[in-house]
Length: 246
Image (cartoon, rainbow, N blue to C red; front, side, top):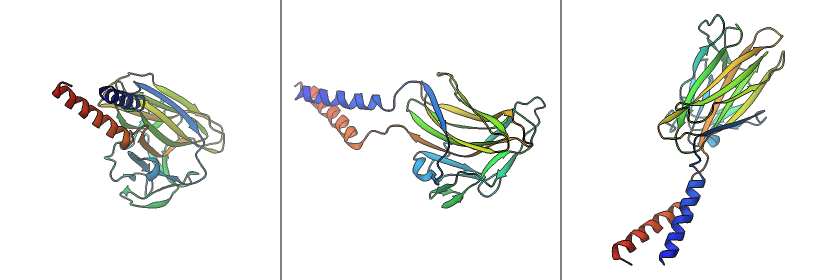
């Protein structure tokens, strides 16, 4: 009996360890977003965010998400480095919907976002943060660019893993949109992942900018109830046997 209990505990611990606890790391990929509507409520089981639905300052987020995806900040690393402004994007190729939002509860036509407003070249961008700890999380970030190349940077607050960086090439005179999928975890609890999306190259064709529409966050692995039950009962039985000396 003891061998069986030990085996059950061991298997449960292996499953748990193989899922969420993978050490500090950041990896990513970028693809063109789906032509279908993106359901943020379904995709962001932990939290989600959408910017620009009603006006340039509107910040919709999961009502029960605890604002784990932070408010959106702006920066400018350009040569002149003026304070950059945001403008409302009204013609996003990606359309977002949700049913558990705040302040807008349920939306099906979210073809909006925000973009860098004053067209003064590279260095302008957006920044936000999400929690990071031992759990492996998946963050999706929906971005765009016009007459520009954009670069996404993701870094942990404790620098326990190398920064992820990727440049999405633009097309002159066209809007290019992409969705970045970031898999990440930190070396310890209580850390953050900072995400920066910025313009890094100007293309011919007039005004240039980068845009951001939404983000979603989920845990990559959640143990099934049966796994948790096996682990709990195994530990309880083992504890009882040790107390009785068997």
